[in-house]
Picture 1 (cartoon, rainbow, N blue to C red):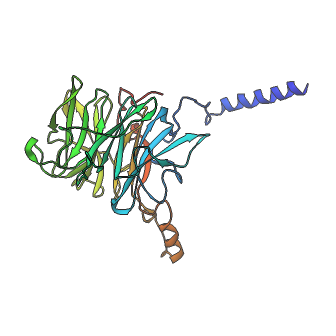
Picture 2: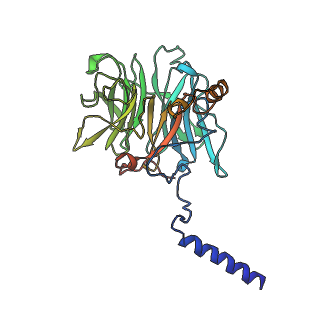
Picture 3: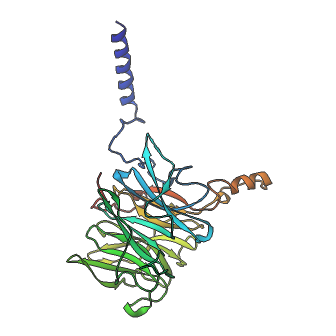
Length: 338
């Protein structure tokens, strides 16, 4: 009798839950970063990944359950790549990625199949210290991540290569301040290098719809090459000095860059765009701080000190927002599968 009553009570709860318009049955296939907010950016990994320290970038493997991101001392004098794993319903305390921690390493991006991570580093080459940054890669193998491998020319040069991103077909898009021998302007422009018969072909300097007089560092390609997300410094129509823009490829032509708008870009520094493994979310970094909130009276010393020590102290934090909230159509080729 008691068992029957308990079963009836549980059944009633289940029915009422399903009838509740605000409730929905759990979806075990949803990645751990999935959010229900359809309109605004949400702080990611608060207190664990986004902290009072400076964090930027955010990529995922293992079906979204492992996050790699960059962590920096102030003013970017030293950067390292960290990782956090989602276990028991939460993001766990980060640790240094196995291919980072000794040299300046940052800006990881993941290939669409989840098996290759590209990142920027000044680590030595053939035992000789480097004065410039290069693009490196590690491969995900059965025994773990491989030793870092420096990409050969034509991608790397004697100048800085800042950021690289790989499309599903292997084409790499990256930023470099190499001089104008291949069409560059000598500041920081966007280049692309196609994979042809297993080897990377000549570097192509992207057209003037992408390469403007402004400095561009961040370069993230959609898996299907339908659009590029780019971080520009000093664009005239920016909300601040550093904003994220998009260029869409239509019938093989890259269209003029467009600011992705105030849901992401602010008067603060907004940069380091990434696309989630399921192709649905934009992850980005913002340095917006507590001063952005309205305050009707002068701050006290205690309030200022507390804010300086808070997550919103002006160091970088990682945010996420649905691409559809920005009017961006998600890539047709999803980034990676579990």
